[in-house]
Image (cartoon, rainbow, N blue to C red; front, top):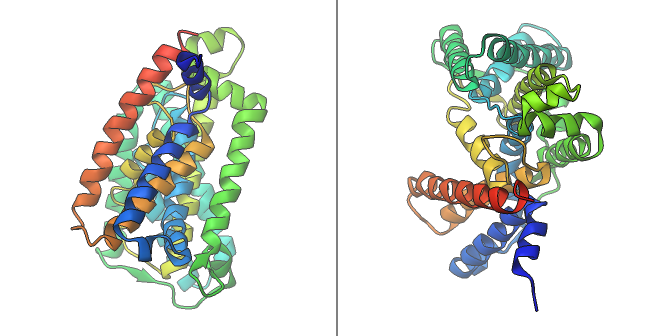
Length: 325
């Protein structure tokens, strides 16, 4: 006789299984609605292109969420990095040098978020909300609300998000796979990954066991902002223009992708592969709704419902089959 509880307990050890099932169900639904359009290579590549930038942000924010914190400033960092790179490149600075400088700045912004949050005890929601508004205000003040275009193409834009072949695949998808693989390895196979899970489960207990809980959280804030900056450069490389409102609402989509992938807002649980799939599910939803000719406003409504359902399912599974042993 099949032991359903044992099966659910095993599945609970792999957060990505839930989103994988959701992907299959969603793909089947869209394929039945638009079979001649959805099940095609160009559609797959379109979804991968949309998922690549969101996915990189999602991986970074998921890594932070596992420690029990989250970052609302990623959307602003996503816009700030390419905007400042565009200014520097148009002023004669090499794009590679400008990109490295701004990625370091992004990492520094994340570290600052972490230091303020950990040292003052202010909830990360407040800290990063304030940073989000501060950075967005700077962007609007610097540009007057107008977009900035890259005047001279640079080889780096082809590396970050150039076209591969004629079907629509871009190098951004490769970057997403690389980032997912790197952080999956760190999370699942290194002591730092164990520290990340331990801090999320109980920062105080982890500290008593010798884990530098504060340092882990601060570094993970830096990683979250760094990935947002990288994703912003990928988006900039695709369009070669950056708007000061770029990335507005991205933080909510990234958190949604992480939750769909199995992360809990309370920390201690999550998966990088699952977060990758969560971002892809969001991208696939957007593409599927467009192909089905659904009104644009249904996208956010659809994602909102999925987020609530995914959170309820994740919390129920973790409480019943993980924390209870």
